[in-house]
Image 1 (spheres, helix red, strand yellow):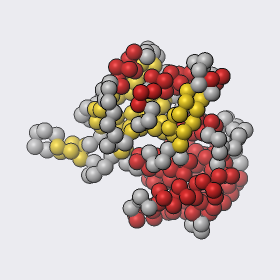
Image 2 (tube, one colour):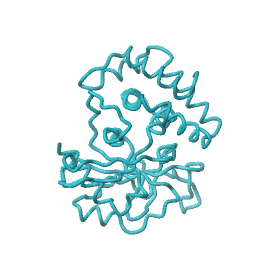
Image 3 (spheres, one colour):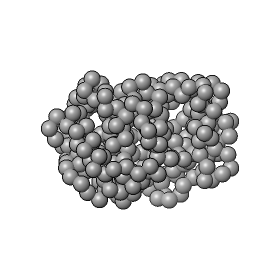
Length: 277
């Protein structure tokens, strides 16, 4: 599968920074199939062409990531929308603007505003670090909490070698972050997040009590009281009963899901994870 080979190429290029970065977003979910605790599902994951690479705000990334990417065939493309300084960037593999690409992300902290150097203020949306421009996002730090490791086997990487010790969000953090950002997601994006939550619960249902509950209890302690409330409110809003978001989520994959079964699994999964919601 060519897109897995493209991702493996990115991961190998970023090998010097592998202990400091976490692969998040849709590719994190795709990599869950290599997590030892994951159940082998019969569903195909949502296709995603972009790979999101996250790092902690306080992480010291030494060296030049941009130079390494360019040496591997990636080209930097600015996104001037929003007028951010520095402009947001994506890193395309090859010359195909519609092909595989990577984006870098880091947590947004504070007010979200910064001095513009002219006596005023501007949006604090991006930063230049280790040669690449990362977009700043709220609640990204949740995805960086106690990541787990996966390895793409040699016979699947597309590079004729294993791609080892890739850091991805632990499954609890993956779902919690989607609950926290739900108000920023509308339409298809919100439905897609519900599908990711359901499929993650399905993959790791057997590990909820033994592994995910302890992680959630620790993660919950790092959240503000308002954020803790938001997580539980999100479960009630999305999974208290059948709704259009669940129906839309069930219709997204080529192998359509049963919305009633999705709702039931999510309700039971979060009851196991949180207790009564």
